[in-house]
Image 1 (cartoon, rainbow, N blue to C red):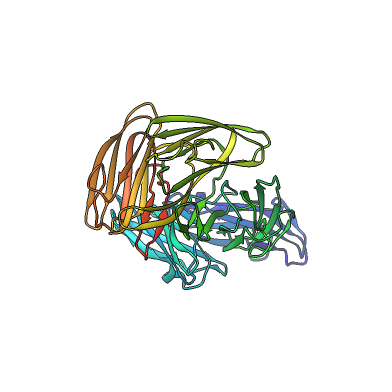
Image 2 (cartoon, helix red, strand yellow):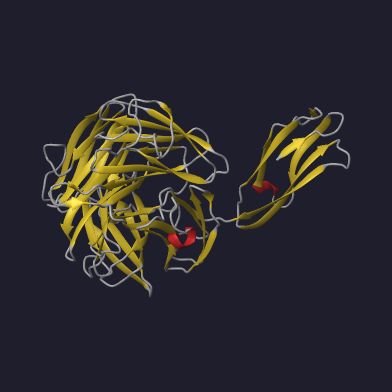
Length: 535
């Protein structure tokens, strides 16, 4: 708010205070001269922030003690505390041929989901949904937002839970799906190791600004041509914008237009990028589509998507991976720092473990072909491959996979990707699973520790919770066929389905899925959500 001195003489400001039962949950900053005077005709600014400590309606008062006629200035303050878990999604689209859904699971408590959508036209009306403990809620984003919009979302759960965003697309160019658990919070910096603007790919950046002020964002690219262009753009308040990475000039550092000139141009084999806000935190994702490219087994028109890493790390882990015929698995390693990094790749695969070391030069990117033993990989023919990465310098690591494979219900020409996890955990949640006919969901569990892990999987069906237990041997990776009744799976015919995995030893859990059904066609993968406490 603005305080203006409108009298003929200076306004004497004695103090600016917060009072009332909930005053501790409000804070204020200002540039007003307390204990001094504000000249006639001049003004100062007061900013109030609300940080609820508990849920519910809150009130307080901002009191400005001054010499204005009529006494002190008193401003009533109100806020509504909605405590719980937040999930942010920068990517989303309700254009023709795209169907977007938010899947929400609160395993043990009923509550509410407060959903805010942000489009290229600004903030949309807030949607509030009731949640039933142990049941998955499917929220139709297309119905909430209407057709033709770029969409970002923020979902706040009043009780512990997990939210995934699933997108199915069949628009005449692309046929496939993406699925991601949301980011827990905005951040000022997002890193993406993977990327390419070859004609085989269409790469984008989706940037969400959930703040009430615009932000200036710098895109710092690193390519295999040793070019490092920096593009700068402004993201308006409460909006979502899209950057086309294949449009722009690789050799320019300039202000840019998001849909026109903020990328590096076409024909670049490897592209990494840092997305950095100069002020307020934002959310960034990188959707990427395959343009009917054949990796050796058949053409793929699917896409994959990743929320970026907020910082480089010296450790990264991946639970999923396979080098069976029909699968092409890669590791993309980005070194954004100013020193070369010696990176060790430790594969946990069918024969035990294998270690490979590679130098990743400063401000560059290296790609490992996991299916090729001569290119930093383990070679062909291995059913399960997990990877643990350690580096002498902080790096960023992703694992893109492309496949053309028949999982028993028809061939799936697909693609998926995940950014690695910087640590292991003992609790993981998923809200979007299915064992309907034609949908093949898996859980891949990496136990890179020295002790066996006792694992419990709770399946939340539309009827009841089903629990399975098993052991994941140390230094191995285990695959659970969710659609099977053996080996820890649930069996066929359950949709929608939520999953919670718990372990007595630190592990990592991913959920790769492969669907041959036209409505849900394609490959997806996401790492599970690990809450700060219990679900």
